Amino acid sequence: MTSTATTVALATPSSASAKEMTAAECKVHTVLASKTPAAERIPGRLSFLKAELKGDQFAAYKSFKLLSSVDFSLKGDKQVNREAGGGHRVGLRLRGGSLERPKLHIEVAAADKAKPLVSADYSVTSGSFLLLAGFRHPDGKLVFAIQCRGS
Image (cartoon, rainbow, N blue to C red; front, side, top):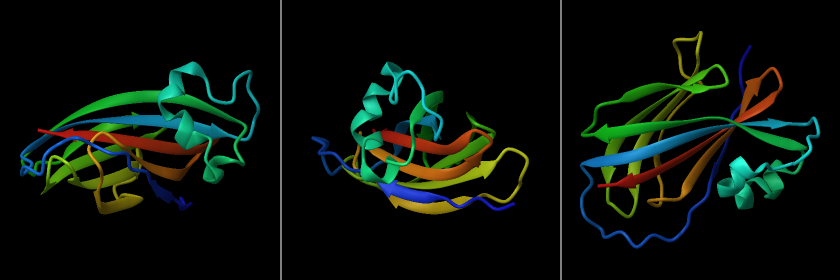
């Protein structure tokens, strides 16, 4: 069974300078998007992603649930792997860039698979969210909201 993933990159302005990046603090939020209605379509725990989840690309989903939030401390080009919830693991590696636009290598894999479903480099605006969406889950689709700040 293969998983189809859709990538949505969203950017917000940052006041960071253009210094070279050597480290970054990141957080990966795992969200379950479901076609089953819930009391609140976007619960309070997901208020930080409300604008993104109200977008057209998520209009087919009736509810969202935060499954986990995992912290990553990146230094140099060493990859950090963590269980991210929803039966998937995420690997992040700093690939340089600037404080304003960190460049990351991101891998997402199903917990029981060695080969990643996604393995790609992304440049993101510091502090904004990069959304990787469309990963299979028994109750809907998973969305990984990745946010990093360089140091």
